[in-house]
Length: 213
Image (cartoon, rainbow, N blue to C red):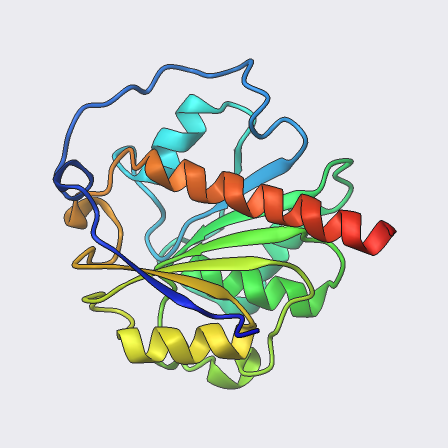
């Protein structure tokens, strides 16, 4: 069975324009209660309007991986920050990564295996843009990954997205005309993305069940 099947999805107009949506704090939802959710922003970090910030407000248990310098995308040091935060977690760790954060997440899986249980990789940056192709060419993680890309992402072509999804063994969803799936593209709250995150959590649960049988 082909792992990286591509599903075309046209985001509703609301998802592609700035809008105000329900951002209430959802402290008591069991939706992600059995997982440690870590958000991993990309270059320049994710500002208060970014969907990662909206998710952190809605789910206070989500934790952001902070970098010493958001303007200096160093693959190994960023990956180490993720490793440091994930180490010792008593719950399965799910990473929600964006852009360069996706690359650092995959690198972390090489530097420290068995630490991450699953990842949602949104609009990964092109490894060639940062000269890290070699470090990531064989970075097939030992956990489920779902990549969300776009037909017109200025930082990763659809063809390259499919190439890297195949290298990493990721399932892939392709959004039509979604840009870099960030604030300039109109993705602020993006609560549909939370459904994708939940699907990763369920996928991890299924994988764990199979391993235990």
